[in-house]
Image (cartoon, rainbow, N blue to C red; front, side):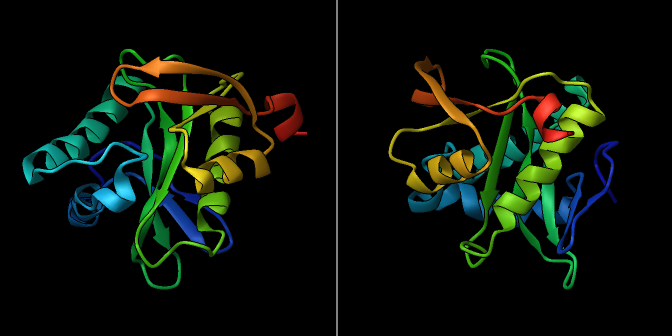
Length: 176
């Protein structure tokens, strides 16, 4: 049972779908693992991580988009999140991604990000996207660059501190 009105986006290996109650535990586990989640905004307390999960549900209701759960098509297992993020105070809509432990290095984040970016341009009508990455998050920087995003500037993010803003190619390139 989806908690939001989100489309189901399908790729070769993945289903991107709205968050469901069963997704709370894997997301909370990720957010409480500071070694893995600090570049995303990890937490030390379960209640704070639960509130982030609820924030994503609310983001969908307020913006009409948010983070999809990345589900493995073959097993139905949640493998991470990916989608468009633009809460109050964000510089502009961001394409973001996270894969859960055990799913790194399989191209899942790239596959999900490419599909979410097409959705943002073709279905939401967005004309630009960024990815905001904490300096030192080499894996996310490398993925942003593989997706064709270019470092545009560094800025102070109220929640994350210093952030690097990468600009993605626009719909004229991605949808061509």
